[in-house]
Length: 201
Image (cartoon, rainbow, N blue to C red; front, side, top):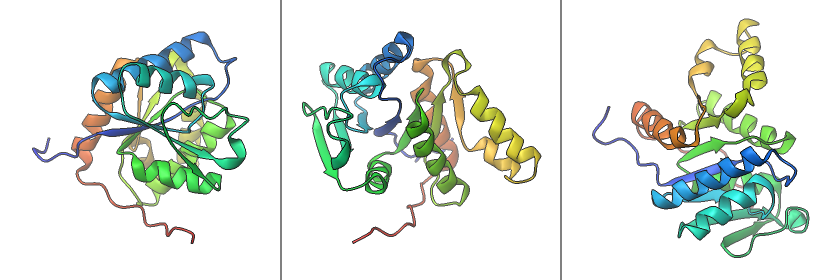
């Protein structure tokens, strides 16, 4: 482990925005928000006040943590903008994802639906293309993400994805294990590579 390993000071959380989610998932998101605050790690998230997003942000704020929300203007009503924290309103989903990427040192992937899948698969594609080496950690409570991991392995088995891809992320079963896994990955990877995608004017 390097004495100059990157510091994980800002974590982006990808997660669901449905209040109908399993209460255990909502509680886990809230617990992670609280842990981030206690560790003085800033939360970067999608800006909503509902579902796992809202639970995580509210808990982080209640514990005195730093929180940055990034919300596309057209979703302000659907995802119920949580305006008790610093929030940047952007024009599009593409701008949202890029800004969240730029503002985070690592990524935690909690249970979510198609929107969460879209966010994390693009992030992992960037990783596969060598555009970054930021840690990606899945919170895999009750095996929630196992079908996705099986699909990843299937693409590797079919020689459509390199074998090394399976080592570019981590899976943990407890909220408490997420930050240690991120820090271990950051120490292994060394300095991150800037994302090489130009911004739209």
